[in-house]
Length: 176
Image (cartoon, rainbow, N blue to C red; front, side):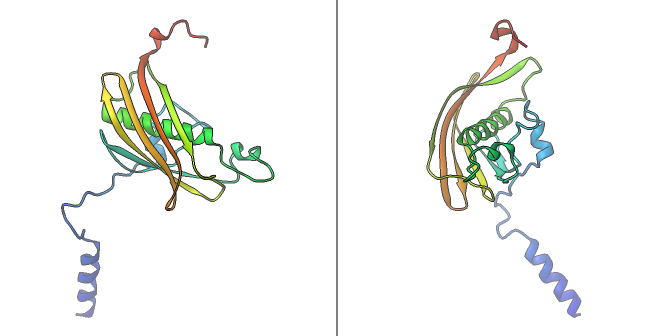
């Protein structure tokens, strides 16, 4: 009888406290790669911890001292480059843009229309950065979004940007 009571308590613990409470929708690294044209070493996001198309996306970046970008930035005091945070923010935006509309066609690219950033604290090896991105405006081929980068409870950066979809053929003669 004791084991039945223990099993019931274990089942009760796993049930959501509020059945209408929204459950997070995570995506692992392999799944998030399918939303990006980037490849190693340019995929900076490690995982999507939650998302809601047309609303928001939360992604994680784990900062390691072994990253190539840290080796020379700066050898005596390792700091994760702000330009990499901007790129990670852009990647989170690209994924949210597609989730909110549709996957890019084979002949389409996303381009950054503009980006504003503010860096408030340094990010160093051992930090885990949570990027919180939200939709501000979605009209036609224009996607405007904003967000912040958090390490624990500290806000380390804030961003605002726009993305556009473009057909490769409309970009002129490619140099590649």
